[in-house]
Image (cartoon, rainbow, N blue to C red; front, side):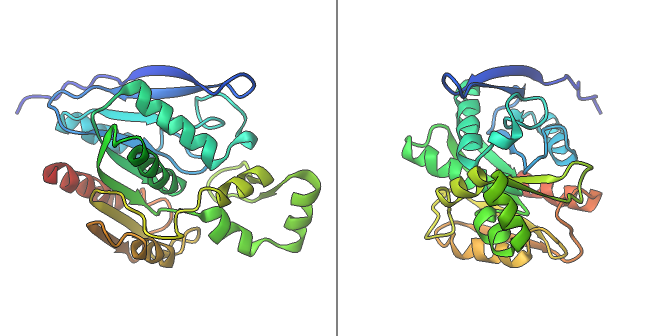
Length: 267
């Protein structure tokens, strides 16, 4: 069996935003060697493009000869900008700019947690623009659409609301790193302008959702709610009984790559 030559992805940097809002967005791009759609990674809140699932997606692209794109939102990873300036609209703008810079013809969007929300908003914006690039599939991992409105705001304590009013943000302990999670007034207000679970979501492509039933951050019922808003699409929901929010165990990665592979083969 011949060895697959593993080459590092091509690093790119683009500037997004006008005067006063400019930020440098770091991208890792891999060109296709065998055609097919480009895999596009959309990370979660405070995650970056070097995480386990993103790297495994890239490795899958190598094996299948597919193109792959990973990038960090502003305020994340290798990209510039302040995290506290981040909003769904801002990060969506950056995702669109990345696709405009890379110019793939067809894409499979792979969105994790908040990246699932970005993916759903991204496909809406691309449909408005005439389906360029064409989204031929979506894999959503523990998707958290509308999380600011549905999963954060209803559970705010009086102290957090007071801090939000006084400082414009509040912090809470993170289970995934030493730095606390930061939620700003701007993020919460902008989230209400980007809600997707308010009516029928038309993606125009097959959607595979992977959701852990032991997820402490995004309850599996949230995934069931999302499915109800995708009546026009071919949707597969895989519930992983002992799965957590990260879904980064070997058995979880196997399910992720299988979902991507199914979409690629059906394209």
